[in-house]
Image (cartoon, rainbow, N blue to C red):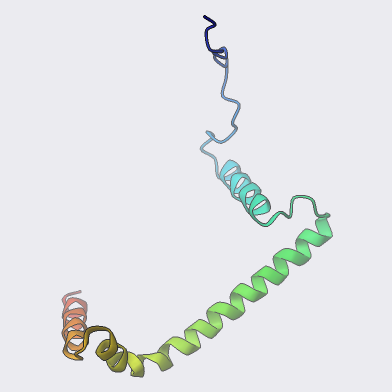
Length: 104
């Protein structure tokens, strides 16, 4: 009966991710970003355009989110009524949140 193949142990760490420096961490994050969006095959100027467009879209998304969420607060009692059948659940939660903020 044949034994399963067992590779020999490595003499040193070959992953390159065990370094505790900021530069190594930034390189790892950039590599993961490139692999996630498949931009590792692009030319440098294409990568720059991609990063600028993604940054602009992210900025616009969070700007829109910060403008929409405050206008949705007035709908919370209606949402609470549809979810729990009673607005008092929301009032209790809001009172509890306000009390915890006052403790700070």
